[in-house]
Amino acid sequence: MKQKSSINRLKKQENICGYLFASPWLIGLIVLGIFPIIMSLYISFTNYDMIGTPKFIGFENYRILLTNDDLFWKSLYNTIYHVVIAVPLSTVLSILLALLLNNKIRGMGIYRTIFYLPNVVNIVALALLWLWLFQPNFGLINQLLSPLYRLFKIEPLSWYLDKSLSKFTLILMGLWTVGGSMVIYLAQMKDIPQSLYESAEMDGAGFFRKTISITLPLMTPAIFFNVIMGVIGSFQVFTTAYIMTGGGPARSTYYYAYYLFNKMMDDNAMGMASAMAWILLIICLTVTILALRLNKYVFYLGEE
Image (cartoon, helix red, strand yellow):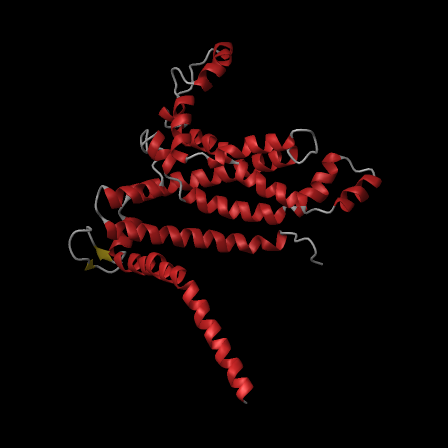
């Protein structure tokens, strides 16, 4: 009995020591994570200008946003457009890059590094760079395309200054950072057993057949992960529009996160901004749950 009591006391002391070592993280989680989330939910039901005392108004903020705010629906449409176009494009491009960079040739590590480098550059710096590249009058892209403009006798594209092209321009700029997804796909490819490819080659399968029948099915876990993360990230697009277009022209790049930012910083409507944040959370959560239903089409190596 004494030995059992001593063991229990020792385990209790170990647990206390463990909680003490983890306490800085736990305190940070509560103070900087859980508490702000709870406060945000409460403030979303109030009229709060960040100066006075929050006044509880129930679901009024949500009612105004959903039934009496055209900018809310405009910003949501712009964001959904970005998600629907940007996620498939970035997925296809990153997979193609991963397939190309998975070859065993001399200097491949250098090429992989080059394609990944844009991901370590500050997003503000990237936005300013592409602001110059897409400049209609003297930008490098229009300079490179000038022979085509002359051949087809068309005016140079205005890119982010044209409301019909502005969203697509920001999407093209976002493709510059597909290297992050590419690295994940490369890692997934390295886990595919070479014996599968060798067996396929014995049956006369070429590169295209091996890619369709082996590589892509076994990459579905990485594709599934990147698509979900890409959708969530695209719903929060903000910085590029803020730096490059200011939400214009004609609010064509006035994204949801941009509108939320303006509600909080320009209008001092913290209650409305908090309600928008919770609506965005519900949208992302719903999309994620629906996406998880597609998990049955994901092939995990080793499963029967």
